[in-house]
Image (cartoon, rainbow, N blue to C red; front, side, top):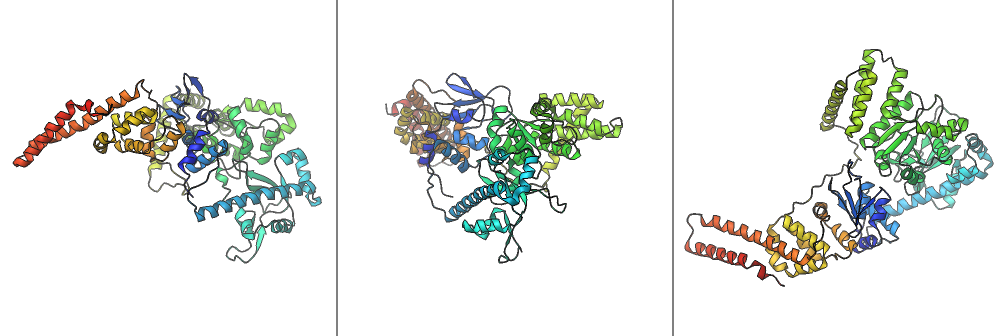
Length: 610
């Protein structure tokens, strides 16, 4: 992939208001000339997260995270840098032209774009079939039975794959799609995997098709539902893993639900596509569902972009209970608060709404229980908790789950609740949690502990060490054009001190590149060209207030920096003079240098250009 030019990044930031961007993710409150919020990157109760509209910069005094609008989107949505840039570029209407042409990257981009086009056009074709094909009457009857009319089917672009799959293959051929593209899309497979010339077949036939969208609304796969019961085949078959589709990080309906989730401040997670459609159409749009898999860590990370609260609405059977427990583990690990709806036996959201109405379902939502209350009620109904062994096992199981709850107040509430229900002391249950936490840390520290090979583990980046005087000079140079110009004039005097002072290389880059302090986008685009550790070092200083006289501040701080370097050199000379066996020439040179340094120290302020 080519490099995005700094000029393009600056243009994107020029057209972007960081307050608008961040407030679309979290609520901000004005505090004088800045905005404040609870930091989204660590748990806190007192706001330490600041957004400065004048400098187009955010910084958290609690955890040290800071940066531009691009940096916020990258961190909050867990996106690669280029994806974050492109997302804001789309928002700002700035075209991106990459510096260097990379044939392989261009080939991958074209292939991906072509597959998205194939999915989008295929979905339209399948939808026309379900609407008009005489053979699709079985699909229309099913939709009618589930309360999904033609308008709903159109909004969700529901489709049908015919029994005679040659109809689709002929359409694909007429529209210029190759067999390789059909295989790469996941719609088709080779008849014989080891023989590329064996021909292809379509993965589904006579099935209702639910298009699966990514976050941006592009169709990336399909979920195909049986219309005629076949015990040899699954009720639902999803597109296999492809370049576009990864079910472990895809949630059905999320593309339509994102805004509602942010508005309602919680996501409703259910088990099936029909449930998602039924709930959304009945005025509960903040709903999504996993696709043929339980809720995963990737799902949790995606959901955390939009909310810190989840309500689980799964079947009221053992499988639904286990699914809720698995979901709690991964959601709680991302600090997402979990409640659970208790559905009547044999009901799902769609059937319940059809039988009792949407208001009755909304009451179920309102009455959703805290996860540990839900678990205790379920276990009480399905286990003999008068048996000490069952109670002990449940207590230990709940202690393992409680480890995921990192908020102390919430965990204290859980301790009191579980201990009271199980007839044990708070201290006893708390000890179980401590023991479970130790075991978890031990398991995670084992060298052969399994980790998903595709998981990207974020590297903890420490800020570059920086001398205090250098840090303040960097701040002045990036905040005041007058101070920057004055420092550039002193570059000869500053060269030696900067070369031997920690962080000096960063100030040298600033004075060499001269980003415009009057233009926030210029500063932020410059920062993005620096190594992450250097960026972090600078971000920590941006919350400072600019002094009334920046030039005077730069002069005084520069004097301190040079004075410090001269004093260090003077100390080194004193040490050298104590060495035995110095010849006369060496002694004379050292004494002369010491005298020069003393003279420089006395006249330091007069050496600077006024």
